[in-house]
Image (cartoon, rainbow, N blue to C red; front, side):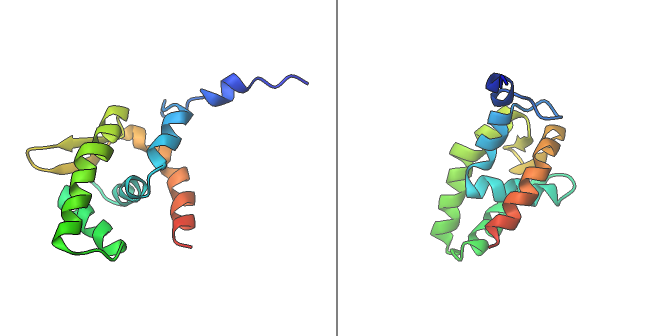
Length: 118
């Protein structure tokens, strides 16, 4: 029996996201939580809301900690998410909105979030 792993490694999800991209986007806890949070919202969400939720979730609601989370999003998570097309970021309004390709992440997000709660 011959198994061709190249098709699995580079398979696309239903929305056209490469499997490698899906797992890269879900690798970081904070990015994964933000994607889950956005999947439960309709329309644009203020970046500040996401930062506050994360800080509260991590038990780190000090001003300095929230600023560190905000900077991490600006320099790490938002560029990855916008480049992949799963979110749109409006820097003037500081809002994030889920884009249609993000639907490819939903089943993975549900599994990951349930595991994260343990």
